[in-house]
Image (cartoon, rainbow, N blue to C red):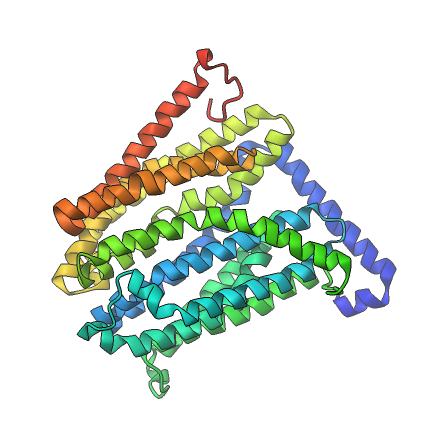
Length: 478
């Protein structure tokens, strides 16, 4: 039934809305009463494929860039911290909007205000980034005065022009993705991300096929255009899911007091949430600056590592989106045994997953590194990174799960402390010291050892906090 039909028959619209509300209540009861493994599995599996598709599309984009040459691969690698920052803003917006919508009484008006707010934030952020693009890249170590980077700068600028033009569309997609997850519609949320990812892969492949040789665009420009078109297509699909599938009509009066209050509330909530989300991009920017001191080959290799890491950490990343839903609702319902059982199950699954991933990358490192670059220095650097780093992701996965569960039960201070310690006390200093003594290999070993050290600190903290003498009888990981 279409929105036009619903608008003609208010009683039909009300019945449809009640049906959606009953479905959401049923999902909540299922989370509180269903088998722990079954609920976690059904919350996680749709998102597993969706996030795999999302980060897989990014990796494929980097692969196409590597086919263009080492200079193009290096240039795109310099833009990854910028892309990570934009992604952090998108995630932060999704969290804020989803939180407000699930708490609001007038969902339709707030949804429309939220999307307008998202478009404004995206436009401002894209504009500020565009007008300061070269200074930002220079801070990351990009030197347009050097011959290789001078040659690739015009196409890199055009590539970023397409990427930044897609920011508003991408932000809307990620916000509606967060809303669908908050409503418990994990399948639709997963379908949305897969639509975006598959669109980007298909368009990139088409632009690099023999049929598109006549396009007056460079290789990097084709990748940027593919991202822009995929974001636009997915934006239209996300609005369809929100309006038609969730029966949320976008009605708004921007000059009303409620709209102005909603804008102020969203802005007030956005600042702390995005500040937390920006910790990782800031750390990645600092790491890129450290890597840039080792030369362009190291930057090219590190760009591949930045794209591989999310896929290697795929299951922990997916669980940080699904586990908090389970933990938060069961914690609120005082079902602590189900909380502990779910965390132990998630940790066990992550240990097995990361062990398998580490083994596959260790034995396939030569084939993987050669697939991205044939130049010996870059290939050897990628080979070292995918051999050494993945085994340390076992410890990193535990930290990620702990932080997400702390956020789910309202212990955001502990979560923030562990995030800051991980990034700015362990990772960045370890990489800096490693670069000083052993170059790029020292950076890789420093990051790996910092992951293990932080995992050990978390284990000690957990043992101390759950010891009977501590008096903390409701410790999360007991």
